Amino acid sequence: MALGRASNAKRIVLLLWVLVAFFYFYLSYDYIKVTTNDRKFEDYLQHVVQLAGSERRSAKEIRDLLTVKAEELALPIGREQIVVHGGGDNLDIAVNYAVDIEIPLLQREVYTKVFEHNAKYQGPR
Image (tube, rainbow, N blue to C red; front, side):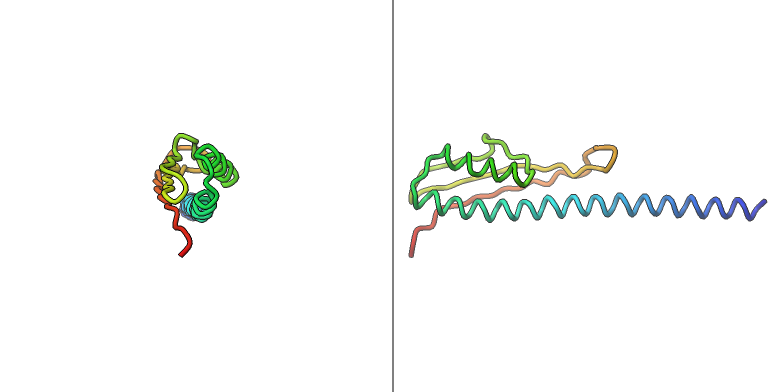
């Protein structure tokens, strides 16, 4: 009888470790995915600020370009979070947003990662 209880206890402990590992890897994966997508967005932001500054694009066009890229990367960035100051040689763009890292299955927020980006036009040298 004691052998059966010990065997069941080992199975429960193993199951708990598997669940802990699952949650850990899921949270790590989610965090890495968000961070990677943010880097792609930041690279695109730098590209857009250089392009829009040299071509003197409007703030609306800039917001449209950045909003489409954010949707493509599944980042929660709305048009109101994209602030465009100046234009042409004085173009400055700021984008601030937060992403919730959630527990799998429960969809409960565990951690909120805040991203802040500022990009300025740098003319030809």
